[in-house]
Image 1 (cartoon, rainbow, N blue to C red):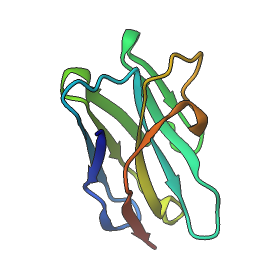
Image 2 (image 1 turned 180 degrees about the vertical axis):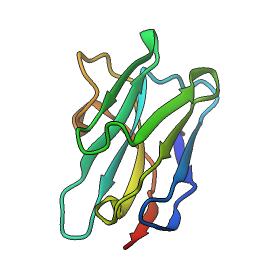
Image 3 (image 1 turned 120 degrees about the vertical axis):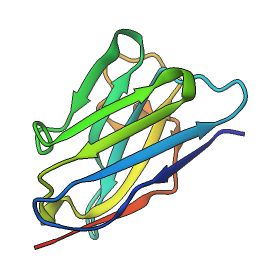
Length: 125
């Protein structure tokens, strides 16, 4: 059974930083890509960032480019999201996701088939 466990969420002031971590468990689990999505109250889940292990291709939502950085370790099934210059509009539950699908892109939720439970990020103004 594959499980994704996020950590690192919390409360931070605007302009501050947080680092989210996600580890996937499962003895033989190997993902093609991992990523982060978020869902704010009353809004739909949206893509934040993703990394495709083969070739190291990175994907970012326009709203986080230049502020967030995704990285990870394929061998350890671990992905991180460094979030800098946080804004109140970044407040959301952040979900880690993993994909075992081959796809031309990894910036939408349908390409991911494993999901974590989410971690709350709150940015105060």
